[in-house]
Length: 227
Image 1 (cartoon, rainbow, N blue to C red):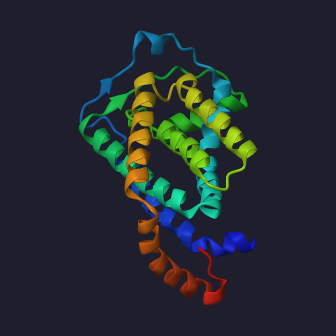
Image 2: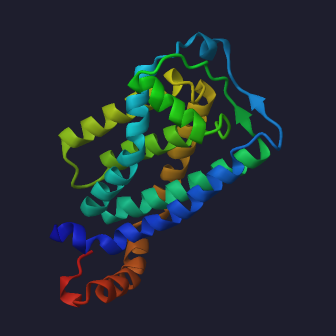
Image 3: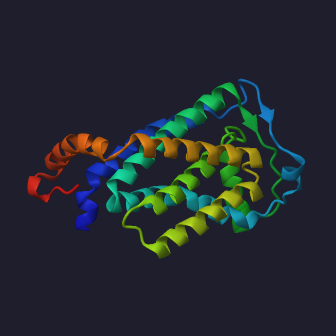
């Protein structure tokens, strides 16, 4: 619990991502024209409702993995946050100027899997597909967990397998096509790669003083602050 408490100020740096996410709903419409990137291969991929489970696991998994990395390696955490913010900005600009859509199946049945998909389809319009933010964030988690200095190998393998399942699930629940995923992975690789070049230990040291100042103010005892 002390480790979580000590890192609360660092967790707060995820707030800009929540603010950016507000743009998603505003852009999720066909008002600016739409394009389909579906290929014959995409059309041949079956709809498998059970894959909705790994798909929705993504929502709690993102903050959990980021929090884990934050407690283990602040520099990697910083790189991930910067990369994700850049990735989201690139995605939202793409959604605005090049809106895509995906064809969804008619849902039949009232089982738990179908009901969850029905809720998902209701709250998430079939737009904002290219690039896939779902896939982009998955790849960030994979990159971050293996870049983390104090990682646990078993946790790293688990997070990697789970994220691969989530990426695959985007096809089977008809939320994305292959080009959406490829573009999401490309953005994650490029932005995280640039972050690793630009954000070095010197940058971390530069950010350390204001971080410690914020931490000591919020925790009330400077001696309790850890970086």
